[in-house]
Length: 555
Image (cartoon, rainbow, N blue to C red; front, side, top):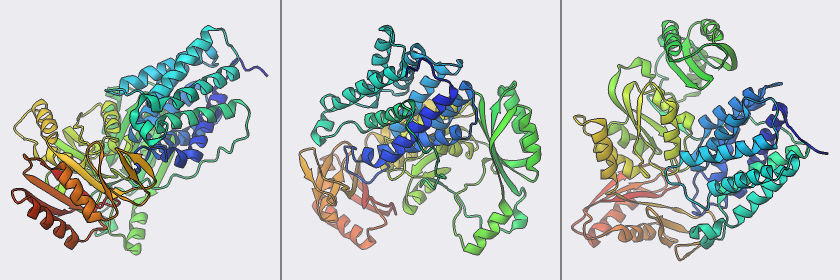
């Protein structure tokens, strides 16, 4: 049967099918990652990204094309995690921009949408690398344009040809990236994109699919703030945590947003209002949620409404003996200041170090779970400052931070592209209050480049890399770009890593030991290094990070 056009209902079905397909295959995609480390991997990041949008899309009943496209674009942009997730969200953003004004979609429009998706994704990456998800996406777009020019009109034939060509492009990614060839895998991000497209093809072929989405569980990222359980419910000024999304249908510009925020401030606190085109996410603590809802309704329809009784929740936490809170002090409760700092970290010791050198807000996550763009936006909202520096401290988080920067309008956001915790610490230490934003950005970025970073963890699978044969369970010492030492003893591998990082100019080694390493073992390792390099100062700090036995820096 020919399929010449598809409507909004089919676009919705195709997207949800793609989401379910990658969710079912995320562990396989994770296993394609070149580095065999126990991190937040590509399959997980892409799944969390698309599921963020799928939950919004799933709530739409009999939607228009514009509604479906807005939900896909906004949900994936805010839920984007890791480089692969951010690129996927940008592909969705470009694709849906081409569709949203139409009621019906044909092959010509789909080809244009593929091309716009690729164009948008390439623009989001400062230095695009071939042999990645971008290459697979571009291959699909090129085949789509070719089919449209050849006069193909059947969408099912079109989709089958595009997916088949994307598979061919994916298969040659090892020839484009030597590191893939050495590891014997195709690009994991490209595989993730192909998996989504295979899910789309399932829907077009009429395959029966269970679109039930599981309730979101904790992602492992959280803000670090002061515990709240020592206060009484009488100290809670506004009792209802109120959240909703406005689907804007009437006039709403920057002036209206400021008026709306001013109104919310008159009825509550802890206010977060974040706009993305015609979707506005709202969070407010108030004693009368109805007033906030009534005001929001003057701008459009509401969805994703959630109201929690904070006094009731507080009592439950006290009864359960909870000792921590994931919610930081609201920005509205502290005076506005010129500059603030947001940093990504994990581990009690590292968190304390960052707080001690000036971090206002810490997003827990980092290596083991990459924070989302939404996590970054929440952090920005909770720092009451004119200019906010973000330290991602992981190369796989930088794009999410930049995406949050681009979505923020009321504050100046500066992303310092720190790729490790030691780089982030060095960058923050080198901030100078008497310098301009431009001068500090240059200084912080330059100074962190002088730091060589090492990390010690275990391998989750067998692989061959950097001329080393690695077995699952082996201990690996990883430098800034390559695996520098491998073995079965944590201390020996760490010492070998430090030796590989040292040179004649090295003056200081900082050793941050993880939650599975004792202080005595860390000090013994430091003593061994001091004995081997008597002119180098060695500092030992409790990092408390999971999974990584040691994080270290050499300066």
